[in-house]
Length: 145
Ligand code: CO
Image 1 (tube, rainbow, N blue to C red):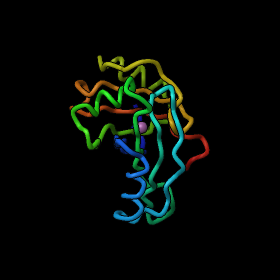
Image 2 (image 1 turned 30 degrees about the horizontal axis):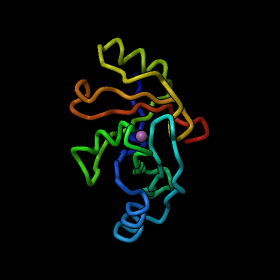
Image 3 (image 1 turned 135 degrees about the vertical axis):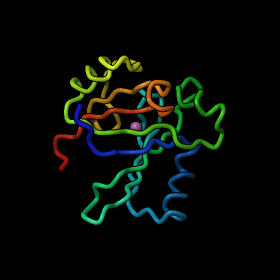
């Protein structure tokens, strides 16, 4: 298992539009992507960049708004109506190797490996096996770095 960088922090919100205004006007974020639907995950998504000194490859905030009441994120938000920190996402160079590694550790993986919001394969690990944190593992985009 080769751990890569922290790619993003997933933040659930009842309104991506309101959250975009917050990150732009309160937090001073200059780079915020256009929101798009990710029906496979039941969410609308957009990315807020936090720049590093050397370019735009800083850790992102992934804003996620449930697409409907059946979205897993909608269920999660039943107890957190204002939203909040939902998951952490780490990059790995090889998604299949990472999946086999976590399976070998007895960690519960939530569903199949699938294509995530960055267009690369991802899977999620159960928070009860991950120090209380819903954890996303994402293959590093081939064009990056
Ligand atoms: Co994510």
